Length: 170
Image 1 (cartoon, rainbow, N blue to C red):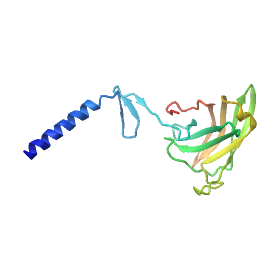
Image 2: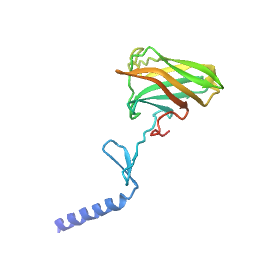
Image 3: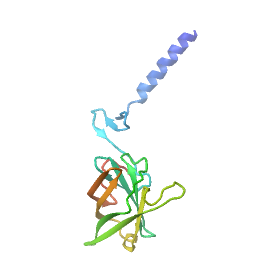
Image 4: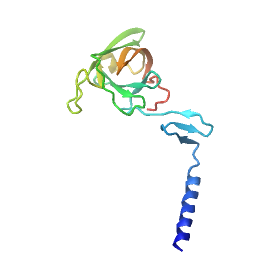
């Protein structure tokens, strides 16, 4: 009797799984979503709700987060999946923005954090502060050059707040 009950339970559980798995998408071993035709729908979310900018073919990301009140723009260096912070040694990096027909330069400086042990020369957070960021909500920009680990990325174009990563969801 116990064996019949165990078999019946296993059959019921299996049937529930089959019925419950009628979604139009499934995930592969890398967490990438696919529809039943096998088309990829790679998605990930910026952890701070910011603007994701892809470096390379999703090798890394920079997540830009605007604080309008302070006129500050923070830049978090992230891995390709926007899951983990990546510390870099850069003393700074530059972004050129087009604002109201005028070119504005942003020089991002490293931010130390005693709580995480991040220091200038070994940090994942950079920021810049300027008054026009208090009122400007949308602009096209180019990240001039940044080196993450051993690879340099130059002239990375993006729009703020849209970003450049089609697979990222805010």
